[in-house]
Length: 99
Image (cartoon, rainbow, N blue to C red; front, side, top):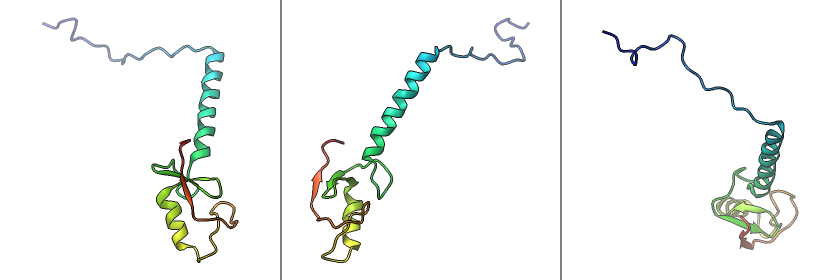
């Protein structure tokens, strides 16, 4: 005896597509773009990732602490240069409280 609950059709059931107005879709797209723009501002230019231990260097850019410290260690003393602008900069690092 076959129970009706064990009988399945050969065609798998699928969820109907989500209905969204074009305004919602545009708003979601705008929201994602805004988040991406903000995140890009804080991406470390050396590692190309969001920093775990973020610092602001004297060039005003946000870096991963260990990446910028390694950059400093590889630079000939006393002439340190920004990895972004190649302009002279100091070695001081500040906590990046904005991240």
